[in-house]
Image 1 (cartoon, one colour):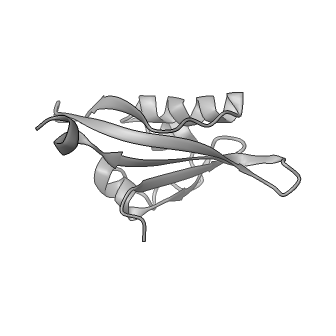
Image 2 (tube, rainbow, N blue to C red):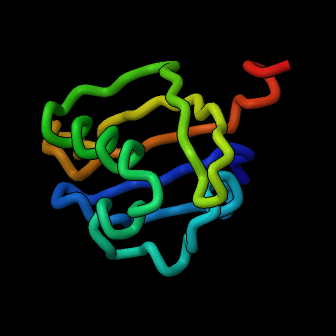
Image 3 (cartoon, rainbow, N blue to C red):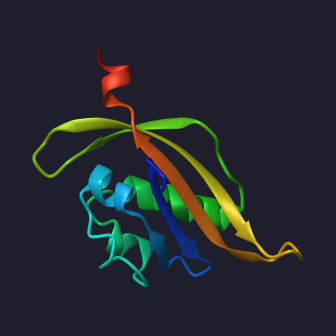
Length: 109
């Protein structure tokens, strides 16, 4: 029921969840991305994959960041995002996630 995109990974960097909003915003196959490595599932947007990789490797989340991305047709859009770590109640890492929205209309009047 999120209006924004959501993608989560396990601790090995494989996609575990990808909602329909992520499919719409990024133009990816959310169902075909499950259990695939970040780099493969997000090959059209390596910067988004890198953001998730960095969150996993450094075990550090970020809040309210923005990045400009380019679609296959050459058009660009502004993605606003935050990342977070997924942990057990004993603070063991299970993976990472990113939530995001297309901010193009807000940032480019």
